[in-house]
Length: 557
Image (cartoon, rainbow, N blue to C red; front, side):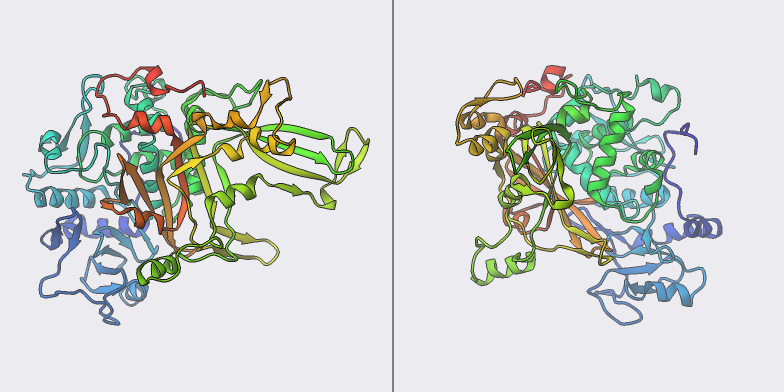
């Protein structure tokens, strides 16, 4: 597909949704308008007349996810929705009763339609006590960021409500806004919530470092992921609290990652890496190569890039070969042999049972495992320059330089090539909200190897254990991406820590939660920022143009 596209194009619907709209148009959507109800938490759910509790018409169950057919209004649970489609030809499209999202029974997946989204959003605005006039589209229109990050919600070019009025109705910090699920896109929403609230990235886009109005790629009609992110950052910090649909970013990402262009569920970590790579490429940088330890200066690498040190030591003569490699994140092995499931931890906490003990996996244990000395097998013998022949050796990793933002990926999905099996590790992992990375720095690792003596190597100056206690080694957590469910099907949710409080971002819905809820979740990606970056972020966000020095106040770390 050509890269020249309309920037207002939405992801194409599945064939079944297209067929439904050819036959019925949007009449089916509008017939449900009186059934949508806006609850106090802002969620839109379907409330059926005469039914206090909706039940599956096949098994009468009500605890499972329920769907209502757009054609016959029959209710089916997740176990019988496919059966309903098979028994009733053409009854492919349904609505999720709890989430008010379109679902294709034939594709067994959520689907997105902006016309349906407009009806739901309009109902939500009415539920919040706002007047709405009918129109063609729901569009977020941003005013000049140089003056003030403000927006107006427009339906069919009709002004609805000022965001300043809406701010009085909400107590959440500026920037907290739900993201609509566009069809199994919780993997994308979870990562976007973390990135939007990452201080260096937030300052970069809100300060106009990449202005979509001035981007040469956009003026030529080309795809530009940084431009799409510019739209999202403006929308998230506009003050508008109605859920936002990142359809343009999804479409743009699909064009860059055609092998992942599907409504099927994807992996949040893979999306995170893919998105950062695409940002790097779209900024016109060449392939990032570390020369003299000078990293790429694009926003991706300035925020997330660190440097790993790998020492391979000959077990015969003791000579060491050292290499350096850049990293964007660190993947950690989760030992589940003696692990507890999150359910076990919740049971212990509320039943007065034994508390978390030393046998439970911890983040520090995972980092110790990552940086421990590992003996390489006989089939991995390396040529030793001192011995002049292949010798057995040991390898040890350490962190030469820490990034501003540290992403730790917990490997919960295990794939065995020999057994040809896959599984998910549900073990609970203890992780601190404040993390000291000093023990895992090269200065500490190599200092222990040489008895904590001061020494020099590679012409890079002196190393000693005390140097690791610099403020740049202290990190604070600001986002946790979690995964619940099975390997084949699950759900991603992000927990954000803003001004000392935790907020659960579950697609379009956001609510404040207690610290214990976050600690008891199945963490999949942990986002930390250097402590001084977090301290600076605690200050009120300025609406004025942020200078480059403000965007990266610690670029020399």
